[in-house]
Amino acid sequence: MESITNLTVHELVEKLKNNELTSEEITKAYIDRINEKEKDVDAFVTLTTDEALNESKKIDEERKENKELSEYAGIPIGIKDNLCTKGVKTTCSSKMLENFVSPYDATVVEKLNKEGIISLGKLNMDEFAMGSSTENSAIKITHNPWDLSRVPGGSSGGSAAAVAGNFVPWALGSDTGGSIREPAAFCGVVGLKPTYGLVSRYGLVAFASSLDQVGPITKDVKDSAMLLNIISGHDEKDSTSYDVEKKDYLQNLEKDLTGIKIGVPKEFFGEGINKEVKEQLEKAIETYKKLGATVEETSLDVAKASLAAYYIIACAEASSNLGRFDGIRYGYRAKDFNSLKELYVNSRTEGFGDEVKRRIILGTYVLSSGYYDAYYKKAQKVRTYVKNEFNKAFSKYDVLLTPVSPSTAFKIGEKCNNPLEMYLADICTVSINIASVPAISLPCGVDSNGMPVGMQLIGNRFEEEKILNVAYKFEQEIKFRENHKPTFKK
Amino acid sequence: MTVSKEELLHIANLADIKIKDEEIDKYLNNLQDILNYTELLNSMNLDELDETIGANDSSNVFRKDEIAQFDNKEGIMANAPEKERNMFKIPKVLN
Picture 1: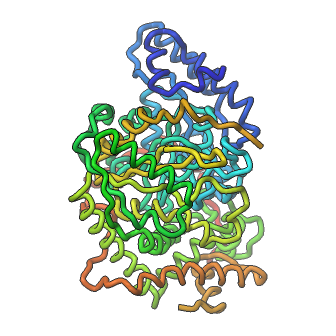
Picture 2 (picture 1 turned 90 degrees about the vertical axis):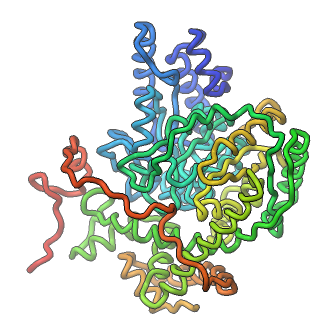
Picture 3 (picture 1 turned 90 degrees about the horizontal axis):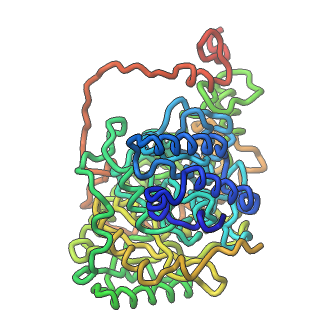
C-alpha cells in the first residue's frame, strides 16, 4: 500500500475527514510497510504496532459514533527513544536504559495522546543523543533509505529514516546541536528545531538542558507546522518553557515572500563545505530571488566559536545530567561489586558506550577545579557573543539561509574513529542552539550520488512562522518530494 | 593545555568511570584533540561580555510548594535493579 504511506499528514487528515480512509486502513498500511522495509533500515528500537492497530480500530468506532475527536485522531507517529512513554521502553539507545520503562509520559507524548495520535514505536538514535550518525546507538545501526550503505545522520537518525522510508507519516526528534536538522537533511525530509522554551522538555531524557529542544520531523513543511501546533506551549512542569501566546503556525504559510529579507552569511559557505552542497544552495538562492525575496550576502562569524563553546557547554551539562545513572533506582546495574563506589563505577563503565563516556570525561574536566574559568566560563561568554551577533543579523534580515551540514550523508563507518571529525559535521547547526533561536532544515536538491542536500533557514526567537513561511514557499516551488524518492539501494 | 595520564585518571574517578590501561592513549588523544580545537576561543576578546546563564532571559521561576500525588509508584519501583519491601537496595555502606 505504497500510496497511503506516501501521503503527508495533511493529506491523511483530509481523507479521514471525507471518509475516504479509516484510521485502521492507514495504520495497517504503515505496518505493512514496516514489515516490508524495516529489516533494511533498522529505524525502530521498539515497535508497538499491535497496540497501534487496536487503538486505530477504537478511534474508527468513536468516529462512527460521532464522538468529538481531534482531526489528527487515528494518525500514526513515531517517537524518538529519548522521550518518555508510559508503559513502553525508553532506552535512549543505551545499554544503561535497555530495560527502562518510564512510569510517566513526556509532556509532548501526553499532547499526542490527547489528540488521539497513535504511536507505532520508538525510534533509534545515537546513545543519549550524542552523535551525528546514529552509529553510537548501543542497540543497532540505522541505514539511510536513500542509500543503505550510508548513515541517516543523527542523533535523531531513526526518526528521519522512518519518515523518509514512509514507516511513519511524521515523527518527533530532539535537537541539542543539530540532532533534528542534520538527519532531516541526510534523509531528504523536513526537520524543525524550535526556539528554546517553545516546547516542553519534561520527559525528554536530558543531555544538555540549556540546549535541548523537542521538534517535528516530517515529510513536508505544512506537516511540520501542524506538529508544532500540537507540541508547543508552556508547561508548568518545565520551568524553562516560555509562557508565550500560542500561535497557529499554519496561518502564515502561504504568505507572499515579497519584502522578505534573507541574509546569507558567507562564513557558513567557507572552507570544508562540500562543493555540491554549495551548488544546490546557490540554486536555492536564485529560487528565492525569483519568488520575490531580497537575498543579500552578509557576515555572521559564529560557526567555529560556537562549535568550540558547544562541546564545552554540552559536555559539561551532560556530565552533570548523566550523574543520575548510578545503578540504584533504575537503569543498568553491574553484576560484580564490593562497595557502593564500585557499584557506581562498574555500572557506569559497563552501561555507557564510548562516546558517552568520552563526553562525560570532557565535561567533568572542563568543570573541574582549575579549569572552570579557562573553559566553561569562557564558553558561556562566547554564548553571549553568539547571541549578540545573531541579534545584529536579525535587525537586518527576517531569515538567514545556510547549509545544514558540510556534506551529504556519509558512509557507515567513515567517521567512527575520529570524534573531532564527527563533531565538525555539526559546524553549521550548533550556533543555532547556542543562540536559542529556531531553524528548519529542508531538502533543496540532490548531489551527484542522488543523496539529498539540506538547506537551513534560521529565524529570530519565537518567529517560527517566518521560517515556516519561507520554507513552504520554496518547497511549493521546487516540489522536491515529487521529483526525488529514496531508492533503498544497497 | 595538555592533559596528563594522571589527570585523566583523576577526572575519570570523579566521574565514576573506569578507564582500562589499553584505553588510556585513545582517551587522551581524543580529549586533547577537542581541547586543542577549543583553543580558538583564546583569540576572541570576551572581556566586556557577561556570561550567558541558562538559555533564556527569565530569571527565577517560582511556583507554590504544594504536594501532588504521583499515581504510579509501582511503575517507579518496577525499574529498581534490586529492591526489598518496596525500597531500593544498595550494598552496605557502614560497617
